[in-house]
Image (tube, rainbow, N blue to C red; front, side, top):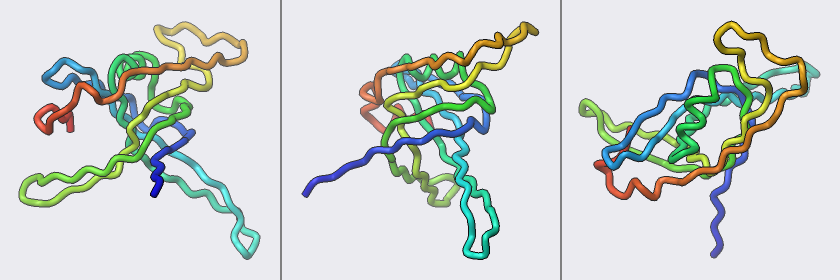
Length: 143
């Protein structure tokens, strides 16, 4: 039997990326992504639906996301789903995250240092990076 675990998402960051380093020194970034869906009900009413997703990025790509992305920025994420469970303060917790294989920066970056953004068409930045090969044990988990 064949299996496939592939996710393609495009949306806006809900918060600035948070960069951490695991004990082995590997960088890991996490950020929230809001993916919008607009549809029309049977009564003809237009509705908007938002899905919030946690994205985890590893390696050099994590550092690039931390440096170049900020809340509100539009991105395209290609990756896979990963289910995690752990116990915290006596309660069982679970999370379904997207582990990014590729993050493509879309739209214009926000101006920094008070410099106005260029009026040119936005350039896309493609960042490919390592995955979680440096994270082999639960001790190294950044979350």
